Amino acid sequence: MTETLEGRLGELGRVLGRRVTFMEVCGTHTVELFRTGVRSMLPREIRLISGPGCPVCVTDQRDIDAALFLARLPGVIFTTYGDMLRVPGSRGSLGDARGEGADVRVITSAAQALEGARQTPCREVVFCAVGFETTAPATAAVLLEARRQGIKNFSVLSLHKRVPPALELLASAPDLAVDGFLLPGHVGVILGEEPFRFLPEKFGVPCALAGFEAEEMAAGIAELGRQVILRAPAVRSVYPRAVRPEGNPRARSLMEEVFSPARAPWRGLGEMASSGLALREDFSPFDARRRFDLPPFPFVSTPCACGAVLSGRIDPPECPLFGTSCTPVSPVGPCMVSGEGSCAAHHRFGRGWAE
Image 1 (cartoon, rainbow, N blue to C red):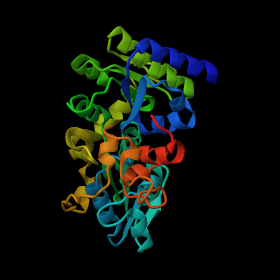
Image 2 (cartoon, rainbow, N blue to C red):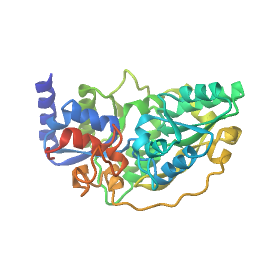
Image 3 (cartoon, rainbow, N blue to C red):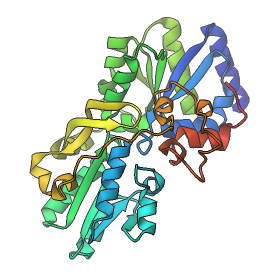
């Protein structure tokens, strides 16, 4: 299969006849393209760059500082996914706060955080909700359940992000020439194809929704190449076993009932209108920002080039900190922390490998 796959990709490069740049939006794609060897099979005509598809990586430093503020409050149990523990804010990380005595607990689901609140009614339990449209429905379902059960000691710090606004920002950037987007299949499972149609229709950029097996990712790259060759940009799913054109209406309905699009900061990309998900007014009693009257947190500049990596403007090895002062053991930025981060993937799989 490997020889056949490499041969097909090589033939695609010959037919393209020129250098093209495709962005793999999803952090899981970044890792799997390395792990499965697909990246190493690509001909010189096809260059892949990473995009803002790692939810931990795009979490803004000010939002990490908000999480740290909450975690350090007396009587608070702060629950989070494991990747968030080591992401640096301006005053350390959640892991640092836990080492200093804060009650920070790693969970694997939003439902686990709610169960913790039910079991400890004398403590405030805050769930740090991170992720794109893939995980937001689960957070919404938990909030609906919390309201149904009348649980008063549970709240959510919503750091959820929406993928389409970030892609619009990148597609409209005059200094970033992307010939196609390899879109995350799991986001497509929720959203379907329609929310991405503005990319070919407004910007003329080909799009392919792909799964995460070697053949599926290669099929996505081949679909992007086909659209470039035919000059026929569109949104096409090459992940039919999971992605329906209409997505998952039930999951979208859950999101829309609980959340509304809101302006949100993205690490390295700045603030974008409608790019976050804020709790609707009906769910304001569960909004940790309101419950604990969170103050604004200032932006603190660092030498980390994570923003340039997340926007595809540089490859991780081009950052002067990469592999020296910034490593998975002592990360400076979130792209080296998360298992889906482009810097971590390049450090683990791609050192010594050149485009």
